[in-house]
Length: 217
Image (cartoon, rainbow, N blue to C red; front, side):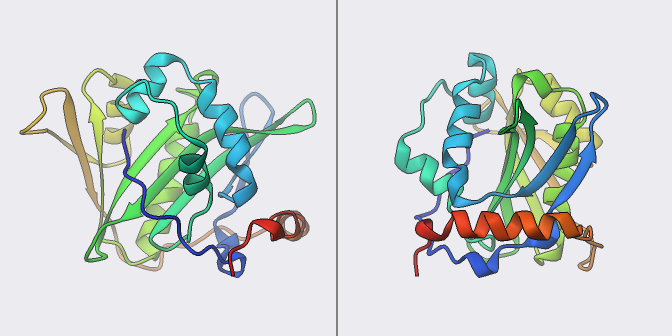
């Protein structure tokens, strides 16, 4: 689903929301990590998006577009307040790979946000998308948002099914018959957040150090 990008924010690493980091062992017996995106993820994000099948790309961006380097930088340099992006990663042959990206951009007024989700083709329908959406909803609730909404193509049954499972109401778009509106009112603030495991604190310190050159002070 398309998601308009705000102007590139002033990125400050000390606002990194480490409490959103989670890990799971997938049924493939492979550890997965969900974490807020970092500036150095631009290349990983580009690799994932370049590997999407044409239909998957169309479902995410509502067109077979290729993203510019500037757009990728905007997607990976977020302020975690008006724009939050969560990525799911795993290791393949010792290298980190992105397998999903879920994000929201807060709208004027500050009580709602537009979300977007994409899962790499080889990881679809395996619970990764549901996990990412649950994390995104929890983060939005704790940020004080009242609504999440997004546009889904009506030719994307797996996404429409996921939206129903995640508690979103679906309705036709009055202006575009190819689009279905997905909207959900969020719960009360204070949803418990996962505890950051000790091992991730050392990982986070390494990530912060690696991103030092990308900071805008």
